[in-house]
Image (cartoon, rainbow, N blue to C red; front, side, top):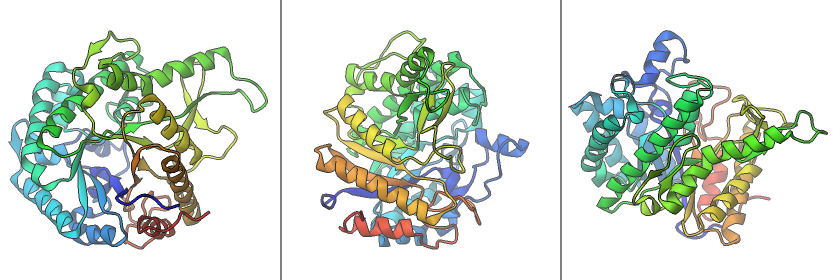
Length: 408
């Protein structure tokens, strides 16, 4: 079996991965303070975009999730950078010329410091209702003629988790359940608000929801999980997936620990339900997430490269929201071994192919990311090295995207 005609093969990346951390972002301060490794110019996409887009098109990868970095476009409240706007329009025109359909992403990890710090970010209803709404309107009016579709916010629950639970991204708080719940609620509302505005102009809008298959942690392989671990698994699943699913199904957002919020229009906000799969997790009784399967070795990112979890994620999404088409909006691996990258991709494609064959309305499969973001990276996630050398995984994906079978 091969994938159906018109299946959306593609890639996606954050602006930080493509071009390095933008000045003025909340992450830029972390870099300055030494709390985050310098990103430089990232993958160099900001300079080599025309050749990069042609390379993607030449490998039969005509869909690209491209982050339109807010901090580069609006350097201070109400002040837009004309040069940055024109540069981005040149990039988007080059994509059209290359035959690459861009899905414009408004937020993927970083935010302008003036918004997240000075104006308290998404959690401040006034700021979200004014600054974020104004930005969404500006993006739609300025770039809507050059994009194929939209992804308003990439992995909203992961953004909240990294900022307020594991502390790996700004604001860097750890185990702050109350603040995490407030941030999670706010980012989900911001995503729906943006989707409803952007789809008014006729382009499709896709979500990109982080879906993590969860399992109660075991103290050792031969022991059953504790009752606390089983109970906590349900709590974490409700936070990372269940509340978002209910919002789309019932138009009510109920984040654990927060009162219900009515979300009119949520059911129809997204034309395609995109999900991202990075890894599964084992949940301890105290809520700490451990790598899963617990018996397998972790990769450079500290997680187990376990492609089978993608199948669980797809079936879970299809069963939870049966009336919505699905999209694998992000799938990838960090590894120092090219053969492992190709095998992980092969396994993921086979799972996606099986899902389509089984009747799941799956529209596309996007690898995260196209180009290694750092020169000489030994464990980059890209299909292509930073010097644009082609990996075995890139050749595999190109072959399948052109109608070839997924190798057994």
